[in-house]
Length: 367
Image (cartoon, rainbow, N blue to C red; front, top):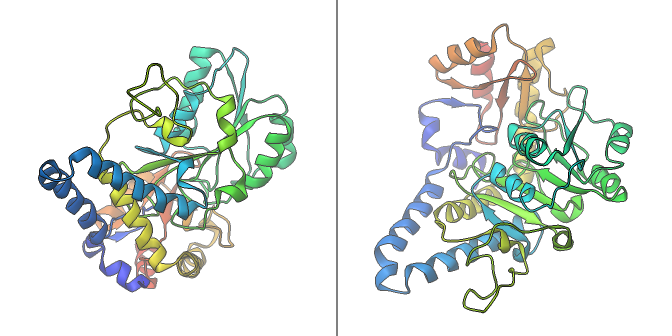
């Protein structure tokens, strides 16, 4: 599949010029068709055939293999979630927090990566230490100082505010040397760039498929390093999270599936798997090359309004506007979809491979 074919498969693009994939991507019709077809099979055929549970678990197992392959790990290390925030909360809820424990995060995190720690500060008296950044950049000397006595470090692989790539592997090395675990929010990376969780070395990686992977809502996933379990205290439990529901007592499932507690719809994960296959059919090299070319065109047109890096790092392009919310509303009335940001107070365009040079020019003309 090439970018032109990808664009043709996305019905929403017939009605708007879309630059908000960093919030939620427009989904290709084949992804929705795959999810819809499975839903009908599960609801209409499975009860009179192999049974709804067998059909559901087989579909989830197949989807888990596809997700695991996409992020460079084994299926046993992947748990399915509803969203990135859901995965972050699963980790936050599986640690035996003690008063005074330290969580380090950056000031670039989405609320999904801030609210769980703020809540734990209220309920468990932990300390949330915020790393200040400059134009979407981390200072590694500051990181080393901040994590010296930390229990967990939480950061994004790619910032939603500036579109900058953070040095995840370097942060992981420093954090592990200090005895801290690391949780990565990778939702802005998957579908844009190759993600290999083993290269990062993080203990946990949370993401979802409804942004750059162009999947449907509800298809999230959580990677858990096999060595991370010894430092967790599971609190959630259900028949899906244990090895033998019929046994006396219980033993948690040995892999990441221990985070999945009960009956859930396979539909979002069937859609997620199909979305990953669609993105892989286009090719991440092709996606990155095209996005780099298109974002260069956009940045040239923005001039000194640009807040994101001038050189390519991602498809997220943040820039100033006199009144961000009014600008977003005005462009929406013209059929151009972007979004405003609270910090920095600016607007952001998300450029994906389905976009075109004409899309970029239309945005620049409207601005």
